[in-house]
Length: 298
Image 1: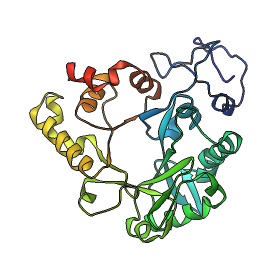
Image 2: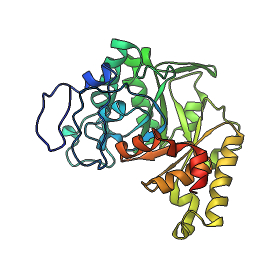
Image 3: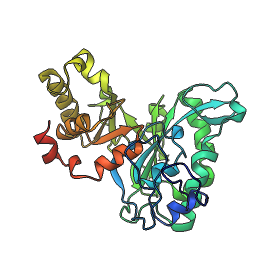
């Protein structure tokens, strides 16, 4: 299997696809930057229904680390460069040497889907590939529609507003061509909403979540910590408005610690973004992620 022992000594290396297909998990240790522990008896991966792998392409390895830890939401930034959907946060110095969306995500996901038809045994619903468009919304989305053509058998589609679930649902975030997607009678993606989109009557399956930057919601009151009455009211207002329309809530660039996760959990934030996949995995697989636990430590 694809493992490295704690002190960095090489064990037998195999394609990381193997761990996913066998539904085993590479167990995390306390420091996410260290090597993985070697374990003989590995447990089944259980889906982390609140975990979102932010900027997943920075992980080592991309995609497979998130899948081996059970992440349901996986985010990749894309830029349209010379008719390629390059995966990067900003325009790379050498785009030709940067991997594209098909190579890094669509191809390996499709291989897993074709071999076993699902990603987690305990999660029959779709997982979500969040595609963050960093270049022109319309042109990039048009190219995306062309690129996903060979992979449509694994994707959720929506026909005249009716959802036909697949193994993966695409969610467009970043620069979102909202009008174009809304007008499609057959569409292949949902939209990541913003607070400004609330109250506009978008169907939930078109805009299943409302996302915002942590500091945008809290503003300068972040300096007073999680016990600030102003912080509490701002988060509660954000959650109440989104949930009143049946939509999930997500904040990005949140603090990477259990104190913040407890506080956000207690006040109703549905999805937790992270760059530290093992640390959030451990938190979500513990009793600490329970709102009752969070209430005692809010």
